[in-house]
Amino acid sequence: SVFLRNVKNSKFVIACGQLRTRDCEGCDIALCCRTDPIIETSTKMRFACLESGYFDFRRQLQAARIPVYCNKWHRLYDFTPNPDPATPNWTLMDREEARNLVDLTDSGIISNEESVLRVIPVTLGCRPRPNPESCMVVFFPAIPNKTTTEADRSSAFELTIEAFLDVCERNSEVGWDLVDCRVLPLS
Image 1 (cartoon, rainbow, N blue to C red):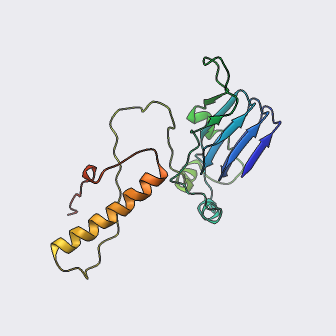
Image 2: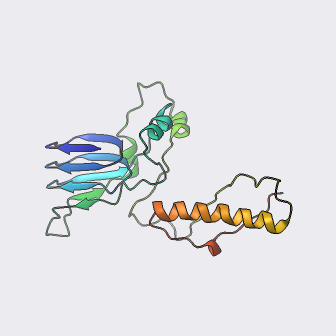
């Protein structure tokens, strides 16, 4: 857990299980968070999806039990919302600004190498989608050859998809049905 208290005009890049702020002002935070972040008596806070990475980041996230596919950085709960909805206590930061929170100039990491080291999928949060169409492609491991009939292979594949959808349902706001999945033959 990370608890920021009485911090003003600061920039943070945080991966954590839980984030809470109190009495903070003017902070920019690039975040990967397993739970809904909480702000309390904090103003002018800006948030973005953590988009950086480095050589050992994936292992460190796994050791800290921070799931990268369950990043709730944008689901902020404000205990003390501003009564004027035109001036909320928090906003979403522009993606380019968020990328600049991490200065890699003296790190020895080349800019195209940094994108390869990125392990947290970039999400838009509650921003409007750039286009209404969306698609997700998932590759599952091959079904073992121990199954002999086409019906057995189909049943094993459906169980794999159902297990995947169960994980997605528990870790996301999106509800998917089995009928939304399509299998494309590989040739």
